[in-house]
Image (cartoon, rainbow, N blue to C red; front, side, top):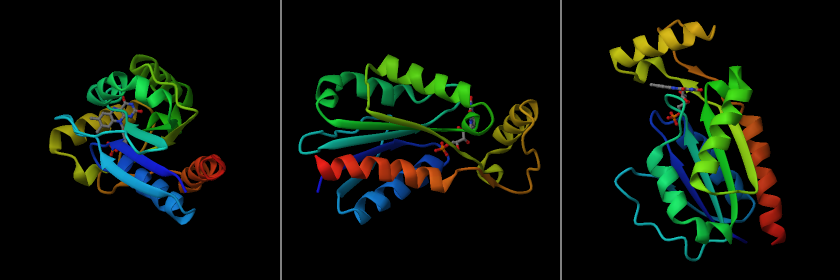
Length: 177
Ligand SMILES: Cc1cc2nc3c(=O)[nH]c(=O)nc-3n(C[C@H](O)[C@H](O)[C@H](O)COP(=O)(O)O)c2cc1C
């Protein structure tokens, strides 16, 4: 049994849902999982006692959260000795996988962290959760990319089988460690 920290940064909640699915899968495999939301105000979180760290974050305006990047960078020495995985959630992961990979790689380079496993997952378009200005912005953004612009409903693009495969790919080496 490994002790695993899942740290996720979310704005509208989709990354939290992905993190929850990974946590559930790892628990089913017998691992002890602590799940925490990465807060911009600081987390007061110690890595002591964990065997592995899984970090997830969504992309907004072409970037993952700067506060999470700074937190990872500050702790790079501690992270380097732990098993690590990072997943990125975005709309690009569905429509422009190369761009999604570019966001992911830039984030990890700037965080000076090299996790063993990475993944990009398609996120969601929860129009009903957006404030009016954000809905307008997203319709324009999505229209340019040729996506779903009917704001009378929400869209979820996450491939839950892919999330499960990612979680299973993490669980196996942890069980052997
Ligand atoms: C204001 C805003 C800006 C966004 N910018 C991008 C972007 O630059 N590239 C992208 O691929 N997705 C972008 N997205 C889509 C989000 O990554 C997607 O909705 C994701 O599911 C959000 O995850 P979260 O709910 O965990 O924050 C944006 C979404 C919003 C609301």
